[in-house]
Image (cartoon, rainbow, N blue to C red; front, side):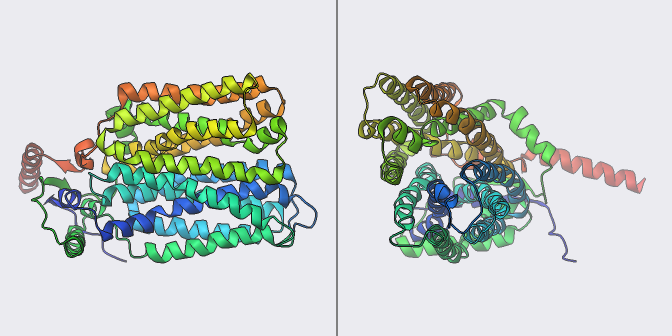
Length: 502
């Protein structure tokens, strides 16, 4: 049996050394190795949304109904994402970022490949559950690793762009599904399977790149592997220095860490809800707000276009590609402001503005003022701002809680948002859209918009000014110790030794 790492109290300046580094090729490697999986997620989710009607057709090669594919299949994916986020998020904090971002990607790829080979409904359901579990775990492991490896001055924009890149994959998925479902190009039982195969190939490339991404040095120090962390950071500094030909300023400070093998779930829960209750309210508000907004628009968007504007089902993918492009551009172009203008200002602004724009869209839609093209344009404008806001939800819960709870915090709030937006949202909005009454669909828009506005108001009062700050300055690590604590601990140890001798 492998001996456990010896734990002690150490003084480290590793966080400050990582935060002072200028942007370099090394950071691009991290961005590509960890961030590009969001493109895969957008690709895969969009493809599934577009191929579900094909699966139920005669000759598709899988025995499944349309209701099973779009209803039960979607529910299994959401359930897997929620449970996977919590399970793998907890393991990420205990076992390390690298182990879990490799395991979750492998699970995701295996389940995606299996989906393309499914022939029965039960196989499809199980594989959708496992795919969701993998992607849920990815959100926790990847956001933790990115925030702990990227310098403080760039952390906001990098996180926003990475999470927003989901929509770049959605653009590709929309266009790919149009080609793959064209029976003049591929047989009816082959085209939809090839879409999953492409996701597998892209994922394998990402897996090869990800193998070179290191473990978080911050995590290593806390878990008794400070020598490994020191070698790793020294190597990073050498690589960045060679790439930029720049000398670095002195580290801004150091801290004392009392190393621990693990943090109990009770202590993690207490930290989130007793030590930081306002931040927890902020996290819940941001995740539920963006989840309902996106489901009020994207869930059943094809039904809205076909029901109210007679857009053929085979053409809705073009509209969705335009919406997805607007989402990605919003995250890309607004991301820099989260580091310069500020977190609280940008989070509140993007939530409030996108909610207000969607409310205006709902009013115009109900009044019969919009066409398929102008409705899509309104969606694009609203989601341009909402995309950056939604991405900032992940950024917020990743950086406002202590290092030892980071992955589980992301997982917890992601699970809440996904459950609310992915289960209750679709059930509610689908019923309202299916009535064919403009007022019901407008109300669905209004619900999502109102929750987004409410979350923006919460951000005004509870937002955290985290821009440019090291993670440890935003939320003190649970393992950090002050000199007074060292003295108390030393006195207690001496007292225990005296008692033993006596």
